[in-house]
Image (cartoon, rainbow, N blue to C red; front, side, top):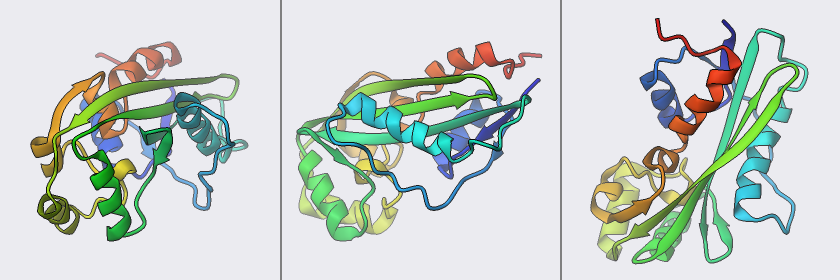
Length: 193
């Protein structure tokens, strides 16, 4: 049985991995600039960023290790909404999402010593109209500065604002866990004993 390294500090990703019974070690690298080339489409951006995180482990994977990296982006009107730097940026992002549809795309990279598999999952999300008071309440109580698009679907704002989704709910949380599980079955890390 191989060892899984999850290169993510996201508590949501940790939770989803644990909930399907995976044992894993969390190892992250600092200083990875999440910059992507111009001209990539939304799916390519998510996969590029997941692969970029995997490259930081280039010489640290042995034959008994499976590395998982992921990156989630929110896409609205041809541009990426990343993680907000401050309350003002979070307010702007949530105002842009209010009453409209957007895409959430997570790119995932699974890497072993001799194999690399990249894939992505896309979910379309429709928000109800949000008042300024609702947006400010969410920002001040939930501090969504570690979340793409300035929101977590599993939090208060998801309960009051998400009118519908097309695709994986867990993808919007940050990891398309069902798709990942299916891919991991080929890597000798799933045990159903």
